[in-house]
Amino acid sequence: MTQQELEKYLWGAATALRGTIDAGDYKQYIFPLLFFKRISDVYDEEFANALAESNGDLEYAAFAENHHFQIPEGAHWKNVREKTVNIGAALQEAMRAIEQANPDTLFGIFGDASWTNKDRLSDAILTDLIEHYSQQKLNLSNVPDDQLGNAYEYLIKEFADDSGHTAAEFYTNRTVVKLMTLIMDPQPSESVYDPTCGSGGLLLNCALHLKDEGKEYRTLKLFGQEVNLLTSAIARMNMFMHGIEEFSIVRGNTLTNPAFLENDQLKTFNVILANPPYSIKAWDRKTFESDPYGRNLWGTPPQGCADYAFQQHIQKSLDAKNGRSITLWPHGILFRDAEADMRRKMIEQDLVECVIGLGPNLFYNSPMEACLLITKTNKEASKKGRVLIINAVKEVRQDKNIAFLESQHIERIYAAYQAFQDQDGFCKVVDIQEVLSHKASLNMPLYVSNVNNSDTEISLDEALHNWMQSSAELKKSMDELFRVIG
Image (cartoon, rainbow, N blue to C red; front, side):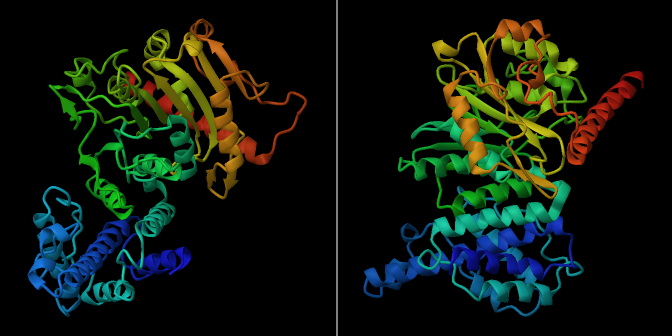
């Protein structure tokens, strides 16, 4: 199959679910089924190869050493395919048996979908799904890791498009991911961490970046934490589908129960990339005031917005010698008054290397403009005491209700980051004392304006965007005001 044929084939299963379940729920059934089919086909391929090597020794072919994953007797895809009734129960039993047979690698990977709910998934629908995926062999010789991995990423994108406002929890705009990876430039043997990893796109792209450069990507140490059970399972499947087996992705709440510790302290990493959930209101602010891991480096964020709780967790988790982070946020984190004291301390400690203002609609569930906040624990001597501000708000391509960065946008932004020099109307190197004199605001227009003053008219799209942006900020302010009054 070509890449396009494979993607069409994999997405075809979702059409069987249309009208039966919500589009936002497709992923909890399609991804586990696809992974189940993949590991069953690969197991058969490995068995056949071992059989050929041993001149037909069945016992040798079944040895665990000859297989990536163990599939217990009765838990293979073909066993479930033979069922004509209670197919959901058979699927569930097979998946649990595989998880138990591979406790170190696959525990909990199939998620917690309700396969036995016949009101939702009848035997007829499940038969259609299984027969659809049975049309092709998804073994390594027919569908190599790279090809299947790309198709899996395609599915993640399609599910994000279909599920609309719920997409942000598991999908980050892949063109932004590419820019973030380029800037962080992970190297072989380094440790890479994403505290809110979603479907694992940021971590995965670090490995693929090294692979594309012809460097040793398998020595990269990948760590991720994700609060949502299904999404964390999708992330782990994503790694396996791309042929990456050395990683640790843990389900859990990063703010209340950080997963990666050493000697009762936060584990530190060379590189951190993140797209945290923004403006979370339901978080344990009280505990953070006296955080046992010392993450309240600059103070305690307001209850109505946990953004700087995540940012401080990231900073505390960076390696002291060469730690570097890049985080995707809405622009508000650069200038909101409620966080001014924390932002000032971050800037005074000379941790901010660069701020990149990106355009609107790069978040799946919001028209707000995005920005990238880049920090380093040990900035180069030539950058100490200075911050690079890149106003790339216009470097974006709008397509219906979503936007993306084209290759020329990525190249221009990355070149400006690398150069670390002034560029009229696009970027400026600013002394941190100047930033502090503006009440520690990193608001783009204070330093770099890309507005042409000779233009007296703006387009309808620009006017609408400006109105939506101001409305969103006003709503946040009003919510905060009412909370205080209440």
